[in-house]
Image (cartoon, rainbow, N blue to C red; front, side, top):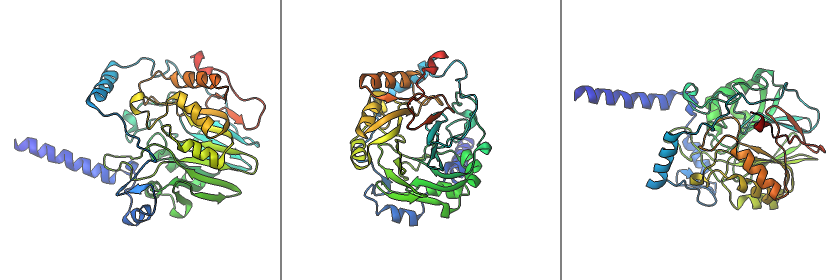
Length: 362
């Protein structure tokens, strides 16, 4: 009995030390930060809230079905071979977007270079050695090969969007970081100068090098460890230049905020919309592909690039289901949709966009 108690105490102590000192988990908001959060309409008690409830189905029946699906497995959750990428990565003088899989994108707009949710790591987990590996194994470029980045924009602090290793590599290349409330604490712990971090609430606007950045609502949640759920905010972003407007959805369940964003900031030349890692049991926090198309319509988008797929398996569906369903729904609604390969630039305003069904070649 004494040995069991000792082992239990050591496990508890080890867990405490890992949560406290392992930098990948990020930082707990300070009292000063919490005081600032209390001024936000989205902050109640000790956590942030959605406009409308966004609860996962955690009933006994739902939990049992998820356990069943996990044990059963799905051989089609991952591609059977490496997915194709653009043969070479290069910067463009024109306004363009380059997708690196999942939700990581590089935007070149009016002479500015911006990264969106640059998760360049191997696996979306605090312990990458045990995680679901990136389908492509590599990226079209090394982080060190990227030019100087004017700004990095984050939508929230989940591991598949905010990656410790990527920040450590990017830090010296980035002029400024724009994040939702609370996420700056993670960056500060990882060595980013606080003067290069701006934290924002929903509907905040900021002028940056001739661009307007607007932090807009999403329907999701946050957290990087067992005890910090919803202690930082999540969001989507509007990026408006002199000639071009882009909407980046971040992660979100479907909700009325899309129409509100469209009424305030639309129409958009291009939307970058989440379409993968969904399930009916958690559709409140991740849209179904058909809802992705409706969200694009709501924000008054012209052309859409589906994101949040083709990098990691974070749900039970076939890896190609998101793109098959979203393209089918888009065709039914007569929506323009672009499907670039990883690393393939999309020139915004071009008469032709990448539309090949490259995933069917695997």
